[in-house]
Amino acid sequence: MRNLSICLIATNLQSRIKLSEILCKHYSSILILSSVEKSILKSNNNKQTIFIIEEELVNNDLLKNLNINKSNLIIIESENEKIRRCSSNKDYLKMEYTEDLIIEIIEIKSSEISVIESDSTISEREKEIIKHVSKGLTNKEIAEKLFLSPHTVMTHRKNISNKLGIKSISGLTVYAILNNITSLEESQI
Amino acid sequence: MIHLNTKVADLIHADVFSLSILERLNIPLGFGDISIAELCDNHNLNKDLFIDILQLFLYGHLPEKSIKTEENIPELVNYLKLTHKYYLEIKIPQIEKLINKIELHETDRQNEINILKKFFEKYKIEFLSHLENEEKIVFPYVIEIFDLQNESELTAETIEKISTYTISDFEKEHENLDEKLNDLKNIIIKYLKPFESREYVHQILISLFELEKDVYEHAQLEDLILVPIVQLIEQKIKAKINK
Image 1: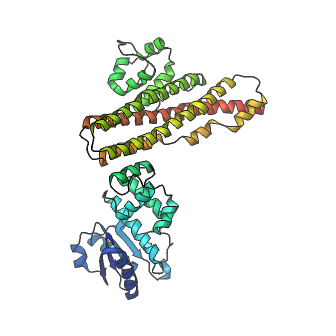
Image 2: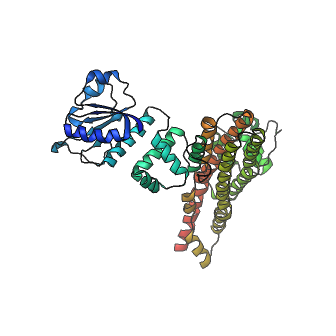
Image 3: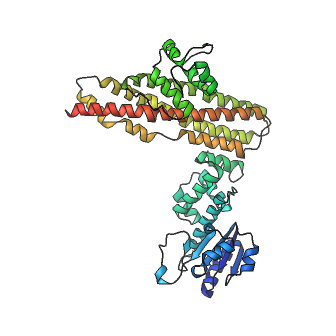
């Protein structure tokens, strides 16, 4: 269970059911709403929360009044033909996406929020990646092991380097050993 | 700005790390009130090149009126070789000695010191290999090209040799040697739990900062002066061949 705070706001019952099933499997702190509950949202500290909201519900007032940063937002794409978007945009998800892809999108968001908020704590996912990097695995190999795309792995590595100020593999390995993420024997140093 | 009239003493006052430049050129202290021009005369240094090197070291860029002539090539190569010697015989051993001192002093942190030692050993191997590549391939090539530019006749053998390697190949291989140093700095500053022998750790950090800066300036000298001049000579020679 990952320690990540997620808020899902969807009026469509099926979307709510599917997404909440997926989210509850992977994350420990979930808030699920069928409409915009201003009172609830206003009372929470929203800085480290990822918001997954139906496209129709999102407008500037919502974001402004509830102090939701655009960078914390993943939009559930509308069924409406007029506003179909390119599927590779990481700020959007479609209900047809697989569970893996949905989780991947959330993981990237989570990494980016930490960087933007200058939170230099390394997340559990990032620790996993550091561990595999120090074992000498390539991005492709790490992607396969963790069921992510190589692109996601590269994004995580970039975020990790920015947070820690460490770019090289040996440097990350030293960091990993010092922080008990891996041991000298397991690493490639 | 540095001028030929600037006193050497003032140069040191402006940036004490410029001492390392004098060190590798084997120029001792105690030079009184002489100017940079006089220093160059006394030690047989090319004035334009020396000003370029100092300017780059102190301000991070070449002077506006930097004179890049082909004649300076042999002396520049010599300076780069002396810089390698300085790294190998002084800077790297300096850091190694400090790591050893910490190792002797901190008896119950052997694991962590071991890891740092391994990291630095690995870095040293990479570093030495890079220097060796420059000494064995790049510099001899540069000198050869320099000598060839005045030859009226070029042998078939020479022509073939030139066509297989150019200085641009070196430029592409130019690795990021200062990246690992920067990583080590951050590890020591942020993530290493404090050692009792703080003084040694501080000294290592200072040496790392110095080496990183020097390595960066070294690469700049190669990229901003050496490579462009050699490319010009290569073009001249190619034009000659095509005639």
